[in-house]
Length: 280
Ligand code: 13P
Image (cartoon, rainbow, N blue to C red; front, side, top):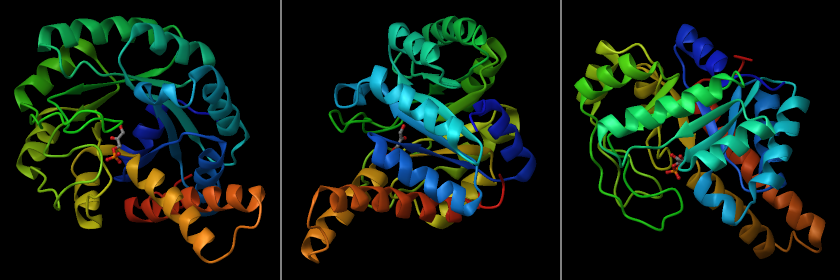
């Protein structure tokens, strides 16, 4: 069933776990992620980032994501990840996304607050949740930039929360999008401080490559949503490649099945690490 992201994060706060937010690029990934969620009775979030719309146009993939969420036997929120433009955020809301992110992390704090408030005013008309980001997560969603990590200043998080009332706040604690060159050393000192002085559910971006222990520690320290993108794309690609290697693909529908399987395996692995199974 299609649900508001705010409700999923509220449940996650009460249950002391984090919900997996899985990036998808096509129908096969949507099917694989939902299959894992249904099998494990897990609430999940399906998301797509604005930079990915050149491969997967929003007017096509958006209605597919919303329809799949409505059909699912578990609660599914549909989220617009790293919204950069008011135009695309509005389009996602019109399509029926139950959550949107405005990423103003590159802006001065004052401007980030002002623009986030503009998005919140719009999203409230649809009853949708809003995520924002302060500090700067490293890398970039599509690997086209190597943005330096700029850890969140806890005092900024308090100001941001007070001046926006945002529903979810992405923070930068040494995490980065894409594959890490070495195991990341997350700044748990910063996370603990932000968690201590704010009330907003926190979001961890750059989930690919973070260790299971760190995921669990984050989920017990205020992180209520964890974004996974690269791991899904890599697992789908590897599953297809090995199916070809094993001679398991002899036609298009075997290829399609391998894509669904890759997305399913990756979502299942992360749901079990996050401890979201049997929380639906
Ligand atoms: P990864 O690609 O590192 O999993 O990051 C996902 C993400 O944060 C999407 O916003």
